[in-house]
Image 1: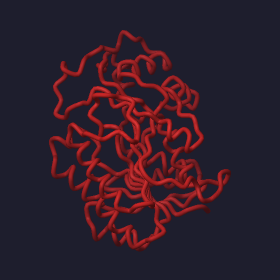
Image 2: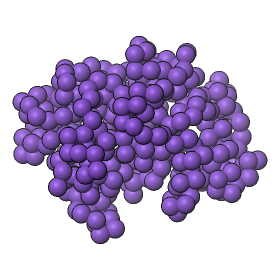
Image 3: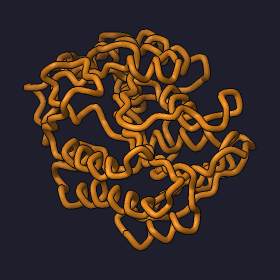
Length: 312
């Protein structure tokens, strides 16, 4: 068996898919917080079991106890309060979860000198004024969620060459049993005959399977050697195409056979929201492509893949 990997946030889209995608090569331990997903994760498809543990990352004592007992080779920290509007409404909860939770994990890892730390951040740390952001561009968060993620990044940096900060673009793919995904929301709207999507909010959506593969290559695998890609610092993971949510929705409708007429085009100023939405936080993934030697699928390719797999 490969490395012992502790994945926080196992009920989320990325955490769930990571556990499923890595368990054939690594010993995966997944943290859950008041989630019913545990039994599903352990028995999926007759594959190697995934150990699940309950942990509130806001509790320093729980986090220290867990890290000391497991002594993981790698921690992939995906757990977060990730709804920008909810973070704007519940700022204390957002800070406790996204900042203090990350700080607790970082402090617990510091004595474990061989443990590598991979933190999942967000494209929203940028202000959206430029687009096509590289790892060298300066962040400038415009909502509270993004502020907490950037502050968490600063804690992760204190681990030096053991830390990787992955800024991930808008993710889509197979949801966990515990949460509805963006694709699920989009599917429901198309079935109902009406869904509103922004024409002026630009992202570089990424298939969650591609993020899993990128992280697999960072960890190392049977066909790439056990050490993995030796990298520290910031890495942008994004899909192969910059487009608006409206454009993404039309591609989804085309791939899955829905009418484009069900999609209503709206602009950011027309829709009242609690959290500011940056105009263009598209990410440049050139470094990741070269470092990991992989292709990141466009939405057309990613959605077609999901359809062929019988997933949506």
